[in-house]
Length: 250
Picture (tube, rainbow, N blue to C red):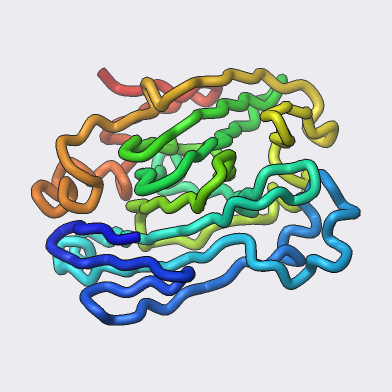
């Protein structure tokens, strides 16, 4: 696969990512690291060292990114079944940035088919949104939502993201609950995770209000006008929180 982004020649061959001929360091997530969050526990035996996905962090060295305290990452999920479950990321939450709002994140699907699982714990139940996304879609993860990415397609899912460089992801809440609030199984069957109790589920065929409309890819758009992306570190520029419901500022 080849991509032309922000004047960079990005090539992905056999999960080796290179930019302008320079090989980018990667982190590998193996199956054993997801042992606590899998639906099909028995599948893990004999597959402990299977590579599930690859993370290439902070791959673009532009002054505008470093000055804005934002990084640009690429992640590749293999088209695997983890027993009955589609391949997925471990899942995480972000820490609070300001005013009761955690850091948001912006994703773009470069290739493949993604299902983004967003979840937010409320006092009465857990709010869950499943968002289908395809090549070219941009999906905005709002503050205070944990999220998991699922590859529901038959090819590699390649996605990029823009996110603040000022925090580290918190995986503990997902691990403690033995996965996300729902599991997505073969045939896209949705099975609730009993560790969450009551859930409120929405299924969206496309990002809709979780989209960010941009004329170009997320990195070129950022470099053209970093001011438009200040909400990645100051979410109150875009959202307000009244303790129970997250509201998008109009």
